[in-house]
Amino acid sequence: MEPIGSIGEGKNVLVRSIGEAAAQVRGRRLQLRLSQDQLAQRAGVSRKWVYEFEAGKPHAELGHLVRVLDALDLQLDVSPRSASSESAQGAVDLDTILERHRDG
Image 1 (cartoon, rainbow, N blue to C red):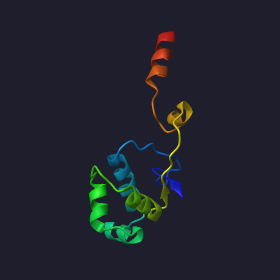
Image 2: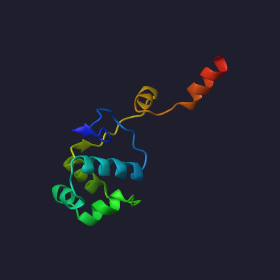
Image 3: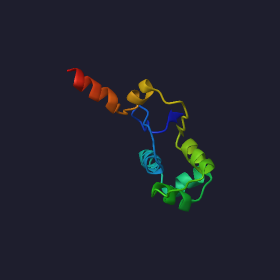
């Protein structure tokens, strides 16, 4: 399985909100040419749940999300944050940038 957000590009994406997770799920679903109904059937959830999740519904049952990710061959990676993993994920460390700017 690919980590959530890797959607065919071979890189992880740090997801910080339901909206960002919803965008990744929708993108992967479209990449696989699945309708919301087909994804719902594969994941064992309702089409309404898929529709509402992709629309950014602020509350999503974790069990449903895990089943949808599995149906899309994505995975949820829960790991401790570290400076190196955040920069590898595309996060920006403003303190480091400011320090470099001050130094010269």
